[in-house]
Length: 416
Ligand SMILES: Nc1nc2c(c(=O)[nH]1)N[C@H]1C(S)=C(S)[C@@H](COP(=O)(O)OP(=O)(O)OC[C@H]3O[C@@H](n4cnc5c(N)ncnc54)[C@H](O)[C@@H]3O)O[C@H]1N2
Ligand code: MOO
Image 1: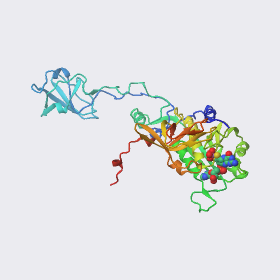
Image 2: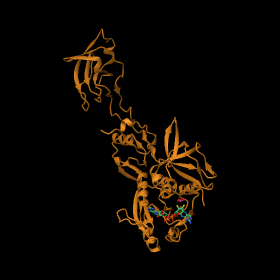
Image 3: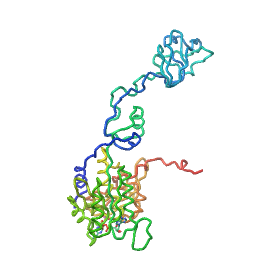
Image 4: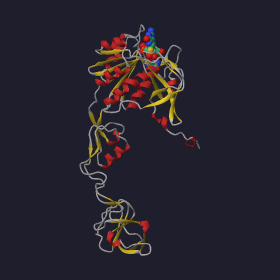
């Protein structure tokens, strides 16, 4: 039996980012940039006004005050998107809109609130300051500067910046294809007629959802029955994927054949059984350099072992630098006994209280109770070596749902 940290070290040491691919800029959202984005053009492209007002020569306005307004000739109207036709000379101004280019000769913009226009003349009641209300060419992006470094996870701001730079396609790390094989004679498809000796293959759904949530691409292989032929028939084509996952059949029962099948198709098994609960019977190996996981079949064990081992692998393959969930320190509301040789991942609901966090168990912690996973937003990590945790003790909680920290103002949720 291997420790959780050692298992993770082995797995991650052998995992590398996939190659890059070009995608349309909007498709890059949430993906990791495989190239740095440089300023191939300057932004803004030329000096322009940040206010609706009048482009002026600062020297002409120095004497202006509410009791001594200065009067200038308005020689032109410059809407955004147009090019000024005339230079501003002594005693002249141009009416200008936000975003419109600054005309030759002008070195400041007086905002419209500080002016009064009558006919072709404008009266200024305040003196302009040099460069006031002007956005200068290149003040956002300079020619050739690195604007977004490779390795950045693309957010809406990066999408907007790339668009502003005219970058319609960008290089991002590829997304791994992840094969999912469910094993078990007791499994039925979601729409199959129910019977008391069949259960729905829910693991394929939770796993697929976890894969999608990571940003990877699921490849559903269906259900393999607990016999060699059927398992081989599902495992062999799954080997086309970048990562192979199965659920079930990894314990010590008479029909737990997954480890043998993995060996038969050519896997180098690196470990079987991790000192954790849930998820203990996990099998991990490599086949032609690809990671292959035999996840335990209990619905919570499947999900928790995915969280601990598969998610970091997929994120690393997609070029991510941050592979792990955020953790918080929380006060556990209920005591718990545990086997000291195992690390426990306990389903909890974390809430903010008095400036700190409290974690409440979400119910029965057996590995078949998916409902307590549904109610959980975190997994409290109870370390090996510890025999029990008392109520009120501080624990580290891995947050599997990041929205927990929102302020819940009930008023926002009233329906019409
Ligand atoms: N004698 C022992 N028995 C068991 C041990 C052990 O150490 N000694 N370990 C237990 C632990 S811990 C786990 S976890 C399970 C893992 O067993 P398997 O990976 O072999 O899983 P199965 O036996 O195939 O199924 C376990 C459980 O989960 C249900 N299941 C399986 N696949 C799905 C699916 N796709 N969707 C929904 N539910 C699924 C299955 O019906 C079983 O109830 O072994 C313990 N036993
Ligand atoms: O360790 Mo198993 O994964 O509890 O149910």
